[in-house]
Length: 526
Image 1 (spheres, rainbow, N blue to C red):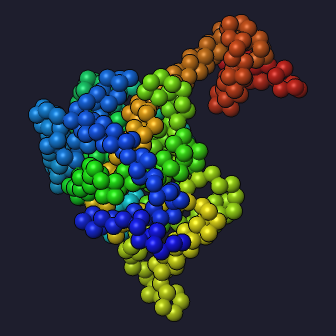
Image 2: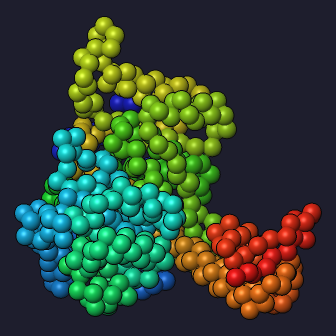
Image 3: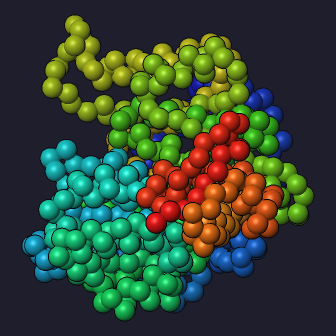
């Protein structure tokens, strides 16, 4: 690559111990000036958001995750006090748990079970793994983040005999998220099977007067922490959602917040070259032609950052994947995100990245401090960390050599401070990019549509079950059932439901198989 271009487009932010190199993105010298009007508008809109403007017009909500790491910029005193009060509540509660003042039935809490999904789990999971103490955390953390019975059973089996020392945190803003509710009910059953009272081991993180809030108050749970409607799930890591689990684990949450706040200061800079999030958003826009033409591949060269791509999938894809823009025009925006870690992926999909379809741009994350291994040298003069660095630099060269574009982010260490910086950097870049393409980054109508469709399917399942039960011993094909239920447009779903019942409720549902498959019939038996 051109050394002169590197000298110009490798930006170092010494005060942050952070760098961003965009020299391997092939934008023209005129690109900044061409985008200046959009940059100015994005900066102005971001300033309005931080001052409390309604940034989510569909739901009439402010967007305030920036206030979480600097309550002094909250638009009114009440919000400032709520943020500071929640942080104090977290620290007080965690102190009492660690000291044993608050404890479980079997003694001092030593484990934490997080029950949530999406933004209520991805951020905490990422931070948990990134900042795990190799000498042992104050508390071990486990997650129920799906409604998969086998997955739930597997996680709970790891806590067998330990639930009396396990603090459960149920996280749901509305309190009605089905996956979280199901996980909670499964956990309650597990505690009860161990002759334990769930409420004596449970806290809630939820919205005011939500179903979960009402349930936890009625059950007299240990504590309740707030979730505000001005913080979206995917930007909630620096609220109680992420800070409470991190603090219980033993992570310095003040350092996370300080890192995020420091990055926020840098990303308010009106000069493009002094604003890392603006630089990042501009590169996304250039690489994707402003309409998602290419995917984003996250390649952190650090095992601790393996879950970062999963966290970014929700942050970026839920924020930017939109059918309509703010003017109601159909635009089908979005950037697909995937990735894992280097150098593992050099033995997986880097072959295609280098030689296959050129439909992506890469974001390398280089951590300068490679850590200390057990072996000083694996070859003369070379450590395992040297090999990791070599694979990172080599892969970057290999991609560039075949006209594959990449961005490199450099941090000195994986620390609470740097993790806070990364969270803040990508949150701000998402907001800037959304302004560039005129979309609402702060709602998720597609997610809501999926939830509604799931409710319809479950309702149909009940209809099928009730009909079979009320006609016990009689056999019906899929088409018979669809016609009798007035659901002829849903034959495929009914077939899938019947097959699922056959496996999971075989005590009651049986099948007479025929060819072709759609002539098979099903009946209910007691």
